[in-house]
Structures are given as structure tokens and as C-alpha cells.
Image: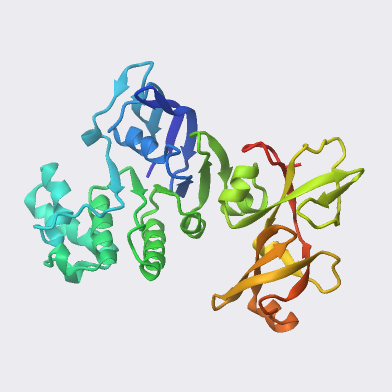
Length: 363
């Protein structure tokens, strides 16, 4: 499989610019998850890669092949780009059997008949669907239909496999199973996968690397899931990846204070050489808000939900409602506060941002 490179891609719909000077590299033999909110340009980037849309400028290469180069006027037709694609809606033909669905791309390429069935069955074996070869799609579950779609993408030995929201239509259990299947298939084939999603949880479970797109179509951050969770580039990434609380704060002298109806100075000093914005917020993950009886910061439990391995709470801090996550171990050690109870809380690993800036750096 091959490395994929997008270099300074600019793409527009009418007068609206969706992508501007967008650059990204998908390393060979890795799964890169491209994550961002709806409308940020993820699908536009895929369409440019597949040859379904022509960018205004830039260059796209897969391995040593140049698929598109605006300056050199290179634009390889979609059917010759050798890219496998799995869509959100499966796109399996209802009148064809499983085997016929998987065989279809090979027939279009005029592969010898004797070779077609052998290659199609090998692809079905990869997704554990050989026993369903003669079934029609209507006889399959959603997860099984998606496996057929994956097998059809794999059968042509593509340079890269693109998956555009492939598990969105599945229920929670099937999503978990399909994420595992995708990882196992990629591991066996050593393939390069570009996985497009707005579901950050799926991306965290699947990716080798993650690329975060902002609403304006720019690339916000690229790295491992651990890098992005522990070292978010800005306020947008912090809010978008994982559940977070944004609590208004103000600076009084050298101390940072809560500004939500609770008069409390945080035990955090303003970093030297930085200035605090007029309106700032403290970002803190829900599992970094800890119940502590000794804390001077008091809040009231509004409600809680038991999720099997943890409790999720909504608590009122002054006039601000924030979310708290408590593991079962912590619940056993410190107890589970009842709705309406007053609790002490403290904050671990807080980050501070300018409340007015969507893309401000952390201080």
C-alpha cells in the first residue's frame, strides 16, 4: 500500500471555499482518521481524492502516482485511480447476491472469469462472509451488508482504502464489532486506510493517527490520539475531542478565579509572560473534576446517570452546570452523592483559553 499526500488543496462549491491550501499526509500501512464537524470539508476532500471533484489548485499523490496536479494539468479519471471506497449507506446492489456484489468491480475491469470467483471468495473470507456468498442483501443484517461493501472495496487490490462514515448506520454493538473488523483487516493486509468520520469516539478506538479539521476547513491538529487528548492545539480541539467543561474565569492579581457565581481562587498561577484575556474560560475534562470534601469549592448535584462502569453527574457550580465523571472504583472508595447533595470539588489538569477566540492557543 502507498502513502497519500494532499498538497495545498483548494476546493470550492460555487462562490464558497470549502478547502483552502489544505495539506495532509496519510502514512503508508496506517489508519488515519480524519475527524471534524459536519460541513467542515471531509467529504469534499474525499471527492477530490476519488476524482469525483476537481480542486481549483493543489496536488494529490498516492505513492509515486500523481493523481491530480493543477499546475501540470494532470487529472487522472476516477475509474483509473485504483482507490477502494466504502460508503456510509453500504451501496450494495439489492438484486445481486453477495458474491455477485463483490465480483462486480472485477467484471468491470474485465478480469478473466476463472480469476473473478477466486478473488471474490478471498475477499469475502477476509470479512468472514464466505458462507453468505449466495445470499441477497435483504437476507443480511446491517453489519453483514457493510462487510460485503468492505469486501467489494478490497477485491481490486487498491492502493488505498477510503471509508466515509462506514458505521454510522449501525447500532452500538455492531459499531464496536465493525471497528474491530476494520482494524483486523488492515493489520492482515498492511493497508493504508483513510477513515472519515465526525464520531471522535470511533476515531479514538481505530486510528494510528488522527487529523482534526476545524469548521472553516483548515487542519487544526495532526498526531496520535494520545497527543491530541493530552496536548490539544487549541480550544476547538479541546472541546471537540472528548466531553469537556468550559467554566468562566477571571484573573485577580497573580491568581485565577472562578467567575460563575462562586468566589474561589484556583490554586493555579498564571504562566509567566502571558496575559489573561478579558473574558477567559477554564477547560476541564469531566473525569478531571474530582469530588473532594476538603475543597472550598462547593457545588450541588443536579442529577446522575449510572453507565455500568462509571457514574456521570450534572452538578451546579454557581450559575454554571458542569459534567463530572466518576469511576466505579472512586465511587466505592468515596461514595455516590445523592441528587440535591452539596459536594466539594477540585479541578485536575485545567487549561485556559480566551472565551472569544474559537482557535486560540492554550495559556
